[in-house]
Image (cartoon, rainbow, N blue to C red; front, side):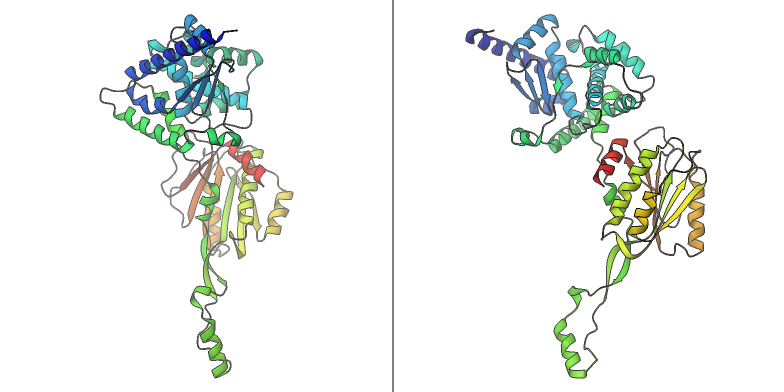
Length: 436
């Protein structure tokens, strides 16, 4: 246990170590000045080791000095590690399920970038072994972002021995997400970090002598800047302007109307404008890709969320026709939904049909045929929930089309320019289901 004098001295020396580490980074990468200046770095001997909370690094001064004696570059490496967590927005993207996998994935992602920098002042003894492990991971993970690594772990799992090895090689800090109770202590908002990330990305790309930043750094930056897409808002863009019998209060004067009835009997001076234009869904198609690569859980979750949106009063018109089509390389089922009761009944008996290959064209042919027959005379749009690995039509249809993809994949075939896209992560699908 340190006495007060030794404690004060430890704090002072540890602070000098941190300041030296910060200057070392800025001497090499001056475009990190915004990020480093917004990191709050606090010494606290009550903290066992290191804790990072979105934008605040709390460290035990004695532990830092001991680690620096063993690894002279430890503080530089630690600051880079925490700064990349912040720049890559790992706190805001935190996954609620399998959080251990997510925290490990974020550590691997930032350590991979640090290793690729080749910055000698940040090197550690474990680097060679860590690089070997990352080399093995990269064989089946196309982009070494936290999201990509997390998905791999979530699908294939990690053994206890592998987890122990990963933690020894890549963990630097105890990463803690701010809670609602911490709101008063947050010095920099999520949006502030997003703005800093954008500025750093711009400076890196336009740095006069070249930044020397690895491609995986830019990939992680790009991932952090992706805006979360609101499927509910996108669905509303498919709403059709229709007419519903309803008095328009903005254009109807009851005084003149009543005066006319009194003066001329049944003849009003002004006829009420009974037809008000409102946004309501009329004819709509939801196509569900039931190919082998799309799980039944995700199909159910997507339908649950979409139905919840369409259940709302503002989304339905008084008369609706929603064709819910299950398909892979051919049409497997086409259910017509005309009311909220139909929706509930369909979901009660729902089962996935198909699990073959994927071809988008049969759905478009089927819908075009329904339009020709007059069964979809006021069709506004079609949403196609799919993994994206299929054959697209060679022509643009006469209605809006939205492809809702499961996750992002650079190897996915290009979407025709006449269609819109939205990306839905598996975790997001679970969240949607829980909201129902």
